[in-house]
Image (cartoon, rainbow, N blue to C red; front, side):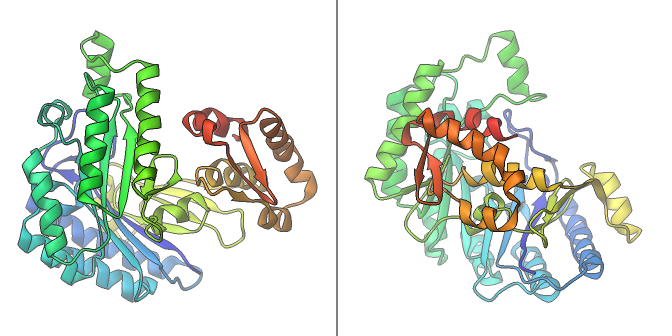
Length: 381
């Protein structure tokens, strides 16, 4: 059974003002104890699986995984190889905050087996970095990128945000040109979303957080695709661009409904041996996660057995995120015509409206529809 692996590290130096991820301020001592729990959970999951696993990808997300020492990351990679057959050519990604890495640390991650680094740059503007609550400066971001190259990373991704408070289209275009000059293999470029329960939500409700209007945000989105594609990046997912052959293999597994196992507080898993699948998440509360793993209990929550109709709906709205399109042939081979009929009718309506494009058995978002993708995906829910 092939299954990607995801490891969630929930600690940060401080929580960014826009972030609603399962994360909190933590320390090095927290990291060491947490890694022990992760290793124990991996052992427990290995013992509970109905069949052996072979893992083509391993992704360290957070939080700020770069607060872990290279030795700690290496222990987790070793456990992934031991328990889950981590492939020798597996894509191993570590998210890193530029304010938390040094040349020695980056070299240590590379030596430990990390071969893809995702740098949370977010902005090349000092004012915007401070407004977002980031802990790094512009110079630290640029230095981290250069140091990662010197450490031997030939697969680098950077995250950038647009539609930020006070940001103009020209400022965003300048950020994209700067990213192109750095020449990472992958760029994730996404719009700021004001999430419930964050400081940004409170500021937005108070009227002190003023965002670009919808038209300006749309122009930023369109400029992103235009400039990055002109520079040789392929727009392969709504917010993701990559050099040919450098798509995120781990994220592609999510969009194609391949199995993945999540470890750490709040991590999600999807087990799909039958084409339908089941989902569960781990306890998000750090204390509950710790207590259950310490008691040799898997910290599962919200376990859901999907129905064939769920699987078909997911196949459409996840598969269409990938801009090369969704191949209908495997769906037609796996599910009955009766089950597919309502979704195919929705698809035909979207084709007639010009929102989707059909190329043989493959359907994809029309170029003009990418910007309204979420409203299209909601039709299949």
